[in-house]
Length: 174
Image (tube, rainbow, N blue to C red):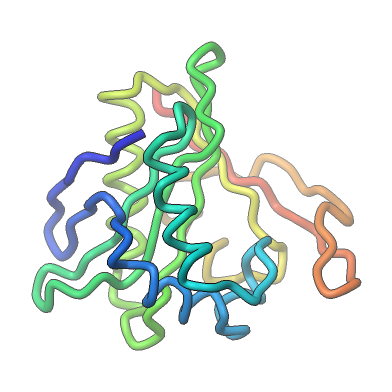
């Protein structure tokens, strides 16, 4: 799906473009970030450009670049994936890739903007996030955004040969 631009207070969300590929490639090849993500590096700029195109063409994914208003810098990505209009649900995923931009409230505002859009425009009822149990920052982000811890999945993921528990946080829009 082609993402709209959504204005917030400190950030705005915009469609990703092929020009974002170099920055996203650097982020996704940084183990400091990817230790918290289900993706496995390495990534190339060409793979990221292809991914952006695939997200635009998808009927069930909606992804945004998170942009700091004061600097106009693309600082991360957020998206709804595998949107199920029948059950009116979707998982949400986010990362702030620019390390110096973490802890400024951009992630919290991005989650609020996407949840509002999901409810108001996409008519979704439930948004959920699958978080590595050790990812304290994401647990705090989603808890503070009104998501409720709804499930713990033991050994839900395998990363670098190690089993990782996941916690599922759910937000009921209605």
